Length: 362
Image (cartoon, rainbow, N blue to C red):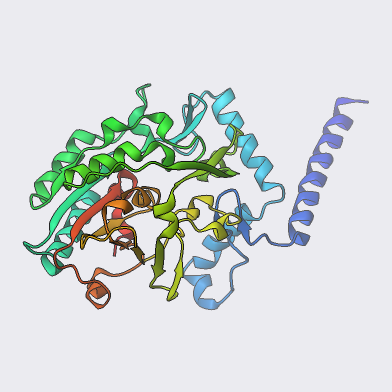
């Protein structure tokens, strides 16, 4: 076979391969959701004259072709392997592996985001809180905080300074020294509940509440966290475990969103995409935990993000009632319709991930 024939054969083979891939993508049924990435995939965009001329159609179509490409998951894994193994990139889309754990390289410090969240906290204080409240806040560190391996990270010293400067009416509770990298899941951003009793005890002690709770640890289900989808290289699985006892088993949780009662641990979430939703039913605007084992009149209000879902059950013994508020999903302007703040302890428990990207706060 001459070189000319070889070149023609290779050219036509390549063209045939392109046409075959194009044909497969055309007849392939669109996938609605990427379970590994936990997001909806772009569907074929609606064509109108307006979307044609403002560029939205072509922008959405470009996203559609990438989201719906045949064997997309395999190509994602291949791309990650090439970038990390061949080109020796430290991270893939800001996710990297350290001690066999997947970690998001959160960086740099977003000072405007810190200013935004402290502004929102000040608005809550000015609108609802007074001298009858004891007010506290804590900063939940991200996994990247515990790695010192030439990785970029948020300037925690400056972050805490900005928080203290803007929240001089609240007492700061330090918890970073009670945690380490093993306090977090291998494939997920969140911390493990079984690593948090010391954190909960310190928070309660700063509020002048002392408990001697003992828990039974129960392993519930294996899962792959959010980072396993963002960084498509297998590094193992995690296990969701819960800490429970008679006090927590007797508690009831009222969900204002659907006007129903549930339990501290939502076992109906076992089959959900995000197994971490087992803790307090996951992303929920407003909950009230009633603890019949506590006869005091002490009540607590926690403003939180998802990290506090697994922490709050460990605070329950100290209070007869805990109100849980997530202002990513409910506007602070309507809180007085549901919550009486008078005389209650107040805790703001936010993770660095939210503090550094607080645009979702209402």
